[in-house]
Length: 342
Image (cartoon, rainbow, N blue to C red; front, side, top):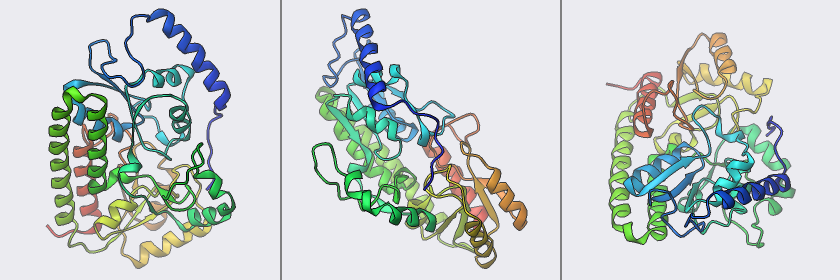
């Protein structure tokens, strides 16, 4: 899968700049009691939590409540897959009491966290199971790189992970399945309690409340998508594989797991056939990724367009103020496109 990324700072330069920034922080904040994992590192005494992007930020805020101060590395409106970190942001990570992130989605974040020295790290994929989704082109790319896979998924200490094969075919979009997202929520709640035992009861209660909300959301999707004219929908990139699998649907994506990958002419021809054979009415595009190819495909086929939000960030264009609201908007968009019975 080809990636068109902005030039990235090399790990060595990033770490060196981060170390310099840390030196300045030490000179200007000698009174700080944060030790990268001791708890209560914020100026107001709350737990200092850094989240990698919006779905992790939402969990940290809902579960942490008044006991945490949450910041995110991915600002609203920024496409998270290609995030680069400044030296200041890299240094900021080392100051956190807790980091909440999803490994494999943002390579620059993965590198910085591995070097951060932070004790309490909640890594989302460790709390649930990853699956392989994407287009045939994703899998072809995966097979081309099998010879390198063993090196790619070993930690620095030589230990192997059991999350499948090459990272190119593993789908990181677990937050779009409310059931898997609830599993991650429980893991984040445990991590916060371990970092801040004095408030463990609050984190547990908040986790239970959030899991109840996600369970209700799952029930709404199950009922809302049970009876539809078609089960197939077309999206900009392969973000909704877990959601489709959970609710008996079939996602056909223009691009692969990377929203900036370019579809081949053969892939576009396949989508023409799928749309006709599966009675597809709508081509979905996103709020953060380019909609040009989706709109062109829809025009060619005489289909409607609509937004299906992968919830990688909340902006003024989002169809809701938080994860739950946008997911319910996604449900209504799917019901309309798939011809759900009322």
